[in-house]
Length: 524
Image 1 (tube, rainbow, N blue to C red):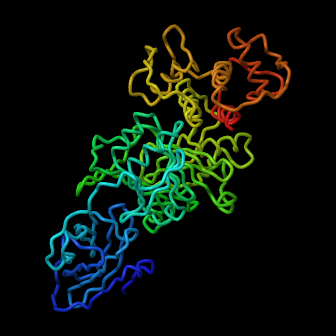
Image 2: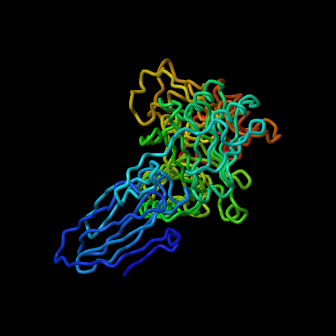
Image 3: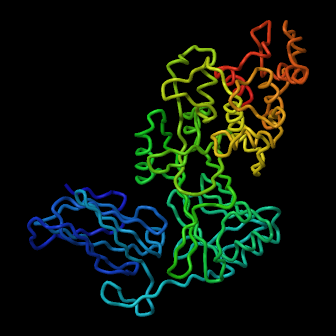
């Protein structure tokens, strides 16, 4: 049965009746033209035994058209009128995917502008791509803020407008798009040469669009093409489109511990030069993203369990981020589809009411600790020095305050390419952990006094306040090593440790439950 997406009725879709007969026809897809003008028509046809799912993706990777076409006597056909507005039909290459049964065919066509004759390329007219040069004075600037103007293929500003804003800028230039652009996926276009200006003047580019704000550090959008004829296109969409919803739902099917909030951000960056379109997926420096939530969205989110995830096919890659008021902030090293999910992990050996339950659940949601398998956390198991270093660096990285510079490995017993190598090396370079005569002893259980020394050295990355308590009165205080005495006192005053009420047990090995509680006390 034919299913036409209601949202695409405005596209003037006309499905023509099929003619002809083909018994047991092999699946095929034909497109009437390789290029089509806005306002023109393009026809898709072929042979098929089963229903045909026809999907067309715009150059900015949003869905242009989707339909299920029922063949008649072994053939099918559909004719689409291309909208005349740039919001619905931006210039560029459109990807067509047709699926029938287990067979899929991929083809493309382009939406272009006429070369003067105005004829429809579907009827044999010649076409040329639109001029890629953006007028230098496009858009308006007030101080360091730019308000782009609406053009044929989205919003745009020129190099002269940016130069004017740069004269007033102190660290950044802000481009303010209309609020609705974040929901329609409208494009922002500007000359690629302005990227060099931003980098040379060490200016960040801040793009605001409705509920989203993205701060691109100077030099973060890397491209070798900064010629006057090239332009950068950025498209941001914060609406849970059918594509985004399907991507999230597909990933959640294999990750049952996650719950969707329905909040997404999809972004693409392209460099366009004539008919050449180059996607920029990775940034040279991470961008700072802020998503402003509605009051209702903020109330429904459990801030201690929520985080941002990159939807990577069926895989969910944890990005981090945190809710501040009604705004969720995170850093993105590349752009694609991101979503806010809640991760509520439970383990059978850390049941409700367990003294470490809240800490284990909270740190699991931040992906600082994990189970020994899907069902067990092993709370009473001792933790090694390598495991401890790994958890501590995850906690520090969560704050985003630690240096990201590479460091040399100072330990002779920490081999390269171990799961803990990078964490141990970085912990040593940051002065968090030290070894013993050139050795780290990664597989030794870490003692409570060793752990406390590291905790205190790490406090500077967190927002921990003094509790006002006096010095601890542990009965076994004399058993604490001289090098750990001050750290134990500080940890007590900061509320990071409590002991068993009477003793500290400095030489006892730390358990997985204890370290979860200690790290959780560090976290904001």
